Image 1 (tube, rainbow, N blue to C red):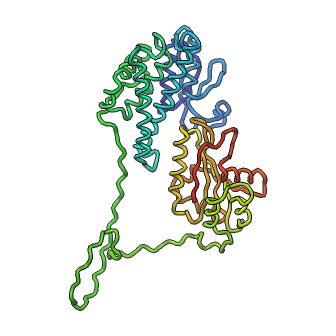
Image 2 (image 1 turned 90 degrees about the vertical axis):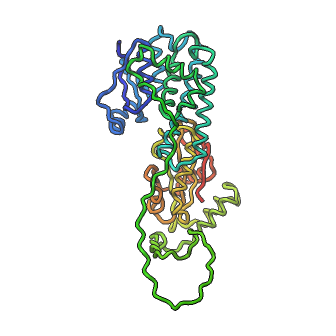
Image 3 (image 1 turned 90 degrees about the horizontal axis):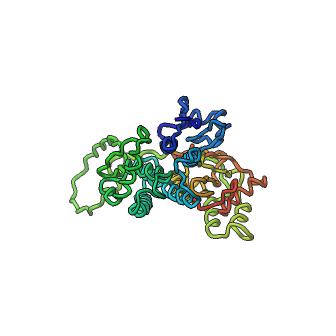
Length: 424
């Protein structure tokens, strides 16, 4: 089969199998870059000069045409095999194919991925309500697909199209993750469709056999290592006295369990010179006043702020390419703020999600004690996933960013504020 170009991808980047299957069904092939090393090659200047987002899969055609993102690459390759019928026979077919592809990627696979992240601990802290939300959305997508395919052989028309390849591939992935035996019984036609498509002779060697998951995996909290507690020193003998009945007290309410308390470690931030700016007063002003305008919280802030005792910082999540649904990104902000709890008395934050699903970023502003960000934010284990840049409100651009982050109307590179959280 003639090669149409080169594909850069990693072994665990799932969309690459959809690209290979699309090419194979169209009687074409793609060359896979054998020297690609994930997180190394895609950070090199040569790679970034072609694919500035630094993301795989990435494709370069024989004619030099450059493209990244898995489904768009597959769709482009389908156009190189016009006789294959992969994109249907007219504009309406093409629109319907795009409809099912988009639904399956955004509603089925995105939620499958988040479920896997939660139960494996890649997305933390674990939340049962959020887990249930992802399951409900995944099930809704599966039911929609099941209902449609229950009266037909293929999703659009009478032949396999790109829609069938994408749906079958992502259903295969879901069944490999958490669609167990009981769940499979509720989508018999979708299971039949997936097996029919993936067992096409053209796809030999591309898709792994679908495993049977007897019971959907569940989250298991990591075990805490038990420390040996020192034995309490024997108390000196005391003269016997009449025993009085002692009221029963729950274990966690005992005042003295015989174990000496660990000395409290003093935070170096407490040794800073006393500041005239009261962070708690600011938090109350921010909560109770309009942000902008006369008498607003920003006016209060500029009147009381002590730039010697506190500093202002811009914060950005370093890996926006990992963000999918905006509500998930907002949950991520909440998790980050939860992990900053130990620094609550030194910190105020306003962070938000900007953009749309699969094209968003996380940004915002922090007001913190002292002149360095790290001593305040390093209590969060994931603090290094964010960049921190000091803001100077005497500069118009910095002031505008700071005020927009607090007013929740920040816009960056055309991406508008969607949702956000405050750390108060």
